[in-house]
Image (cartoon, rainbow, N blue to C red; front, side, top):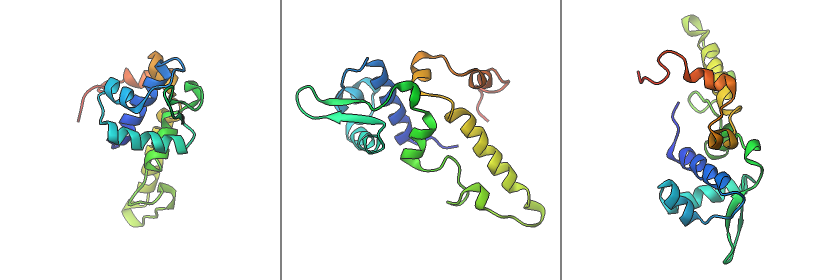
Length: 151
């Protein structure tokens, strides 16, 4: 799975907003705190605003705030808002792909991959990330042999 800079920066900004205790933060403040390019972050925040994930206010007291409680904002929602479906095969959803012959059951693998991604991204909220208290099943994945080793 490829996690784009766009999704990474969005999640980092959302964590910053969640930690700000309902205080509005500007894109400049978020970019500085998270060490991300401000112009790119502004575009990301605008997409998140259109999706209702953040709100914005202009003026001296302006900036961005979370549009909902951080426990209600799931990483899967952020990913889909910015990048589309969690798993695609040649720009098609796994359930739409058909294989024949010896590769017939490859579709099953792609659907399982998507289910595994959902099992993490649709269970972890911004509040979980900020608190460091991940859901039990997700935390267990971190304990698996080899979880922290690249292949």
